[in-house]
Image (tube, rainbow, N blue to C red):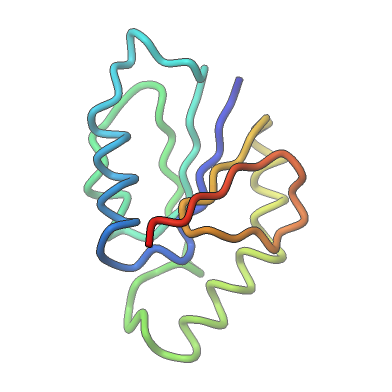
Length: 116
């Protein structure tokens, strides 16, 4: 099974730390997933340890320059709604995890978590 992780709306705090710690502490000898694809910005992806099962996708629309600006928010939503599904299909992901608690992408096989 191939897992996709969308971190488009994780900017700071608990959600960001949660996904980084899970992936950094995963034992690749006991991975349930054949591959994990994670899409995000450099502030998240650079903190995830290199692992042969984890594929990091740096997305220009998710770049963290002035993450609180209206333009940044528009780019992140645009990427989530219109581009994520194409990336999921391209990488043959069977399941998508949304640690940011919502899915507007039209993907049917997903899991969301609210960390508040």
